[in-house]
Length: 394
Ligand SMILES: Cc1ncc(COP(=O)(O)O)c(C=O)c1O
Image (cartoon, rainbow, N blue to C red; front, side, top):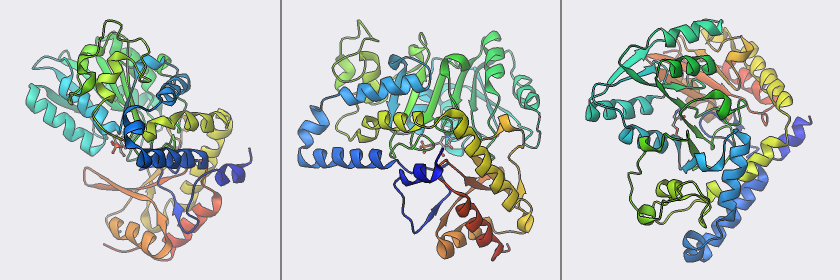
């Protein structure tokens, strides 16, 4: 694979070093130009673009994405971001008062808040499984979760890739065991599409939400929720708009809006700009153009370089496992109390124009570096040099 050519196909600002795909990814040049074209059309004639557009590209996006993640298009509802998808579920899930929801201690902070609000309103109890982040054996993660559910557990909410430490959790056996125990599974796959191969049919979760504006490289404003056939009763749109009275006698049949009657209730929110959804099919083309093994190897090369370059520097300690199946594009370091992590991040931006992230979970700071296939060795070297040139003490 010619990685230089891949890098050249991405819309980039050469004056900065972008190592934060984990927050939002850069977009391929053809995705960028098509999105701009669509926005120009929208600004020139908002009536036609927002209300009367040819919806074929919306269906094309849904169809191509369904091929990429191994499901059917009628199972995929587009959302603006994963927060919206998860909140919709939290507020409408058909679970009785007294139900126990099991989640881990490394769920994304604001999603944890969404569950806390829902639990308060609906009389659910949240139970938290603690993950042994320093373990290298996938079985330890399986045990840490499966040993925590009880007779009251109705739903397991778990991230596929931990946003803090970059662990890729071995979800398949966990989901199998949960299903055998009669527990529903909702996966927060915010980081998965575009970072790891995703086969929703094999994985077997009842619900899977993911962002496409991170590793899948869609413009900001693209996410999806997969809903297993038969699980629709757990979801209700919180915003009523024109799809409310649509004929839903054939809920899963393709309609003239590039969706289905069931899906459109969620996607039709009133006047809005759905450009990010309309270019998802182009992102699918981008990912298809790179063979999976080449991609996997590139993630491996760059994340190994990040680990080797930064582990131990100033006391940073790599927490992302070495076990290949437990990691991919996020490499994370625990920041010792002696370092001021926020000032380090700020300094990297102010003095070196390097974008990375700092994530706090349970009082611990994680210095998080994202490397996608469009990043390069020189960028990682520049980060290592910049850190060595001065680490702010706390
Ligand atoms: C694991 C996880 N879940 C949910 C989210 C929320 O994503 P968004 O702000 O796009 O809704 C993030 C964002 O980084 C995340 O990392």
